Length: 394
Image 1 (cartoon, helix red, strand yellow):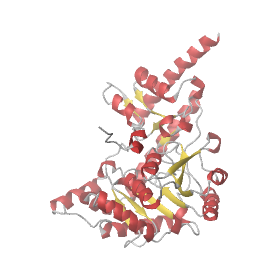
Image 2 (tube, rainbow, N blue to C red):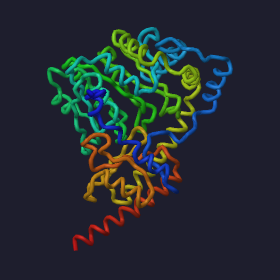
Image 3 (cartoon, one colour):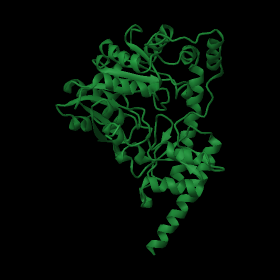
Image 4 (cartoon, rainbow, N blue to C red):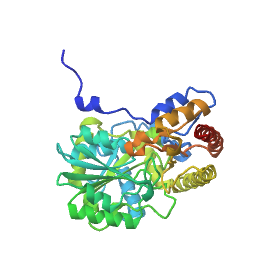
């Protein structure tokens, strides 16, 4: 019997994010700092709008591209936050989370052999989505000495005559790195010079703690070259509602909508009605959550400094990426021992690309009380490791 499986699919490794979360979920007194999910409930008024839509019998399919009311609110949001104008009729697509938008953007844009530049460490979906779309991932290894920012020099060095698409994953998961305007301007110059397109994943755009997030699409000449991807999971604590969106040139969005049409039909109707309310009335909720995350972020930065654990200060998302190279073990080994010995789950940096080896992703989408307990356990754990190392040195 011949194999029923796709070779491309078989060769893709499963995500390394959930492994430690699944183990921790069955451990007594374990604290999970692994999964990037807000610990806040979806705001009450957003939930009520979703419930109201069900009570009113609004359980039908929407148009493939999404409710016009929601697409209009998405355009209003992007215009007031980024100064960008998109037409809700043809330049906006509502998707099942930002992850679907990433997938169908690549499927709509890539021809076999087209190269996709993927800065890493970064979200686990970019590389497999590029492969499944027939593209060739080309990894750009981000450096700790650059605060894990993508530089124009790195981008220029990675471009070939086969390069078509640059993934721009900032604010970044797992490092918490951001790009500021000067960084983006230098990158945009290379993009324009080399005739590239950009997939800008801005799912953490509202969780920026240094200035205001700037989309590369807002720079001169970039809107027509950029697919802007965002969603509701992180900013509005709506992970389970599974709702995202893509904005971009109508030429590309038309083809993305075609793929979405055949694969998905439309995003969940209830979620779409709830998202309309989130965009109209959720600014204060976002501000409250961002303030809480920032407090936790500052606590962790200070905690790592007191422990003598090397870690740059992140200014975006809700992750921190300490270096654990001093302990002479792989990220997987460190995370496994940390979970087994101290009952704290974190994600090995290697789950986000080879250059994440030697780091640990810790999510601070958890209560400050949990973070304090987890840090006391981490301090005890690395204290034991340092004592063991000192003993071996003698």
